[in-house]
Length: 81
Image (cartoon, rainbow, N blue to C red; front, side):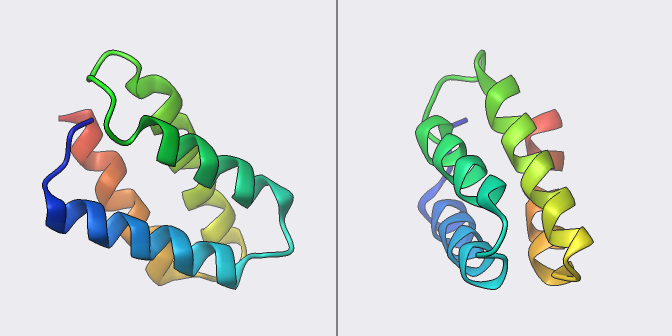
């Protein structure tokens, strides 16, 4: 997934927010690491990226972090197109 600079900044801020807000869940760190590894990859390996974004979005929603979840959902939708 190759993103423009604005999208990259927004995603990075969202990941930082998730890491701060949901620090107690070890899966958050794993998801963030996977997302960062695959941000600039070609479209083919997006399955790992999409799975990590989806898992992080679910964790955020379960922890009441709805703004973070909504931002992640927007990136997930973008990957689907």
